[in-house]
Length: 262
Image 1 (cartoon, rainbow, N blue to C red):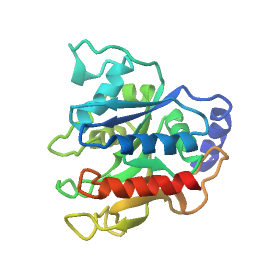
Image 2 (cartoon, one colour):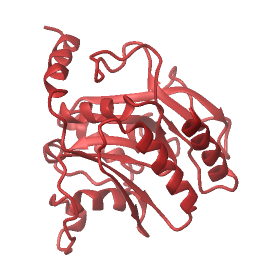
Image 3 (cartoon, helix red, strand yellow):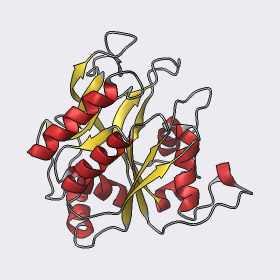
């Protein structure tokens, strides 16, 4: 039996029971509450299975906030060892979603959580162009889903930056080390160039990306969704990027308002 057939069989079983999952979005004080509210509305529109969506204000750096999510779920994350972190929720799967990232249809969230339910690390692909690490690809913090069991198998990696890794990149290094399947959503298109360059690169020969990137699945991509198949070129999530730059939150507002009118 090949991998696609096996995943199809696993998917048939997995979708019969709703996973115990949630969505967590962290935001800092530099984010307009209109941005928070519009993202919440778009997620609610496309959250077909009605997974709880928690918005958490934080003053910590992005990676530390991601580690905090696991501590708040009651997991023994090393970053917060010795700290008295109150348990806030009980979920087996967490989908971390940046405040300037949104799903593009009502299968995107379910498909992503299903992948995590199957024991995979799932989300948008990214590369740290400012780090010399052999063009290493990783699941970005903008859209990242993983289960508590998988985190335990990966020995609770930190999401904080390290000499070889950007935010959340250590998750992918750990997944590679412990044989965890990684499912990337790749760039299908982007709206405009980044502030500092013409585009951001992935590995040589792969699509590039920028502000307002639509992530999805190219041929030979993820062989499952809630129906068992992901069509070629299927859009999954849109990420604004650089929302702290002047004018970018307003562009995010416009995108969300357009989506809410569909």
